[in-house]
Length: 117
Image (cartoon, rainbow, N blue to C red; front, top):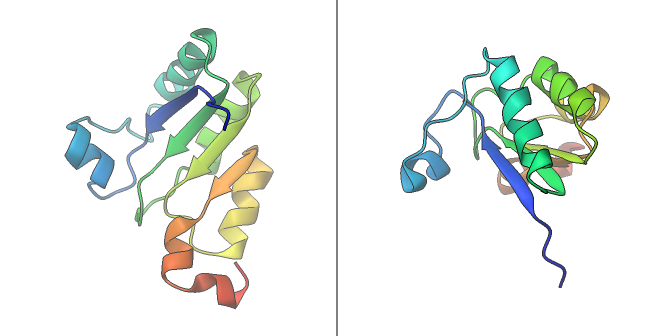
């Protein structure tokens, strides 16, 4: 199995995530798009092969389309987005904004995959 160096950016999803609790880190505020873009670029410049914007499992607020677009336009590497994606429409918005991959774990846990997601 290949190990892929990944930059993981915790983005404020409106609730305290398990990652925040366990790692005792603070998420980046969604309003500070420039800081999120710069942090993602720092990961790329340090040799990461992917960047993952994560709002946390079950997030009330997924990563905004504006953030996804700004980060994807700045990066030359793939972008993964996860946390709080609850519908097929939101999933399509995430891809349209520039995500390479989307993580929809909570939707599967809630059995949303049977309703089209």
